[in-house]
Length: 484
Image (cartoon, rainbow, N blue to C red; front, top):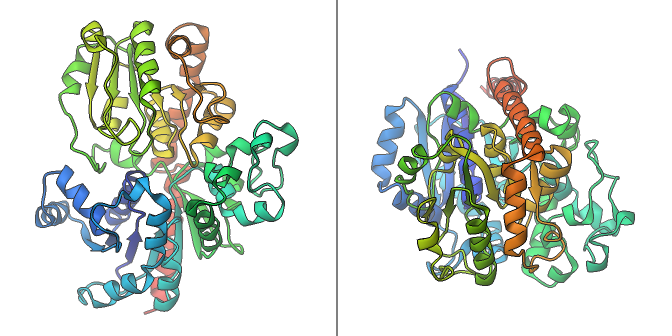
């Protein structure tokens, strides 16, 4: 008999990391793994509060689904009032020090669980390297972002040695500075594609040195998994650009899609979701609605949000707009006078909602978004063309690939070079019209529908991601068997 496999999954405490790792955890649990899911106490409490549950209720619901699953949380050492994701550098420094505490947590928790087979680490939780080494188990690095950005990030110190980092302001638009020396057969990487924290203006900030440190530890891996699918990235060779000393590097995503296609809801939110919007969507014509959301972290100036509002008003399309309470540089926004009254017959504004359910609704025609990787994969998987408006980190390379490589989206010119550039209401209106009507809109829609079909095929039985996940499980079984 094969021993029961036990994966310890450690997530970075942010919405865009928790969701893919929780979906991955459920895919493993369905295949018989015992799962220990580790995150910070702050994140755990946010998730429970948003779901209106206590820990006991959540644990009972998981057990009722037949999963062998436990949740463990650990203090990040930061005060309750700390901004966490609004002060990323400090959050990273706190997480980097958690190795001994995580090891103690794993070794003192319930001893009746199976021996640990592997530690699946979010690629941005570097402290797991010392934990895996101390416990003598494989470290599986899980990239929650796309392959191109993952390769750039993992090679940040090499790019530093070659003079590509820090990215100088005057080089952002320079074709002479395109990068072609990275593994994985990537298209040429532009200076604006590199993680925004590596720009010269950030060199004195904590986040610059933190990301360089994380890059070094990201290359301490026994196995690499990427939340993407081979066909999107140009084949299996792209992921091999993340292989460390020849270790396997496999695309197994989109990890939420098997759960979605089989009717399982495994999306987890830090905010209470507004459910009233689905009745509103039901009343809209097929393919007519523009969905507007900038994810869980991105912020904009109040002036920019006013221009966006007026552009949405002028375009004439029905729109569903997610306006977080902290969207306007940390506070709520006062929209232009009379805007809500003038658009009330074709607009709905909510503070948060179930994005995947929105994107899968037949009334959806387009998505104006920040180009976070999870949202990009969801748009692909639901067949929704998009307008990318990146804010920071990997969102610039995601937006560039959406527009230039995969060709199912548009962007606003110049925002990748100047994040303070004001996109006027006229530009917002014309870009939305290009997304929603005419020959270009038809082409974008055809391209994303084609990718949707490929993504669905990849995660179903016999597909590339399905097969790669089985390969990972078989390799973990061999490791577990050899340790018996």
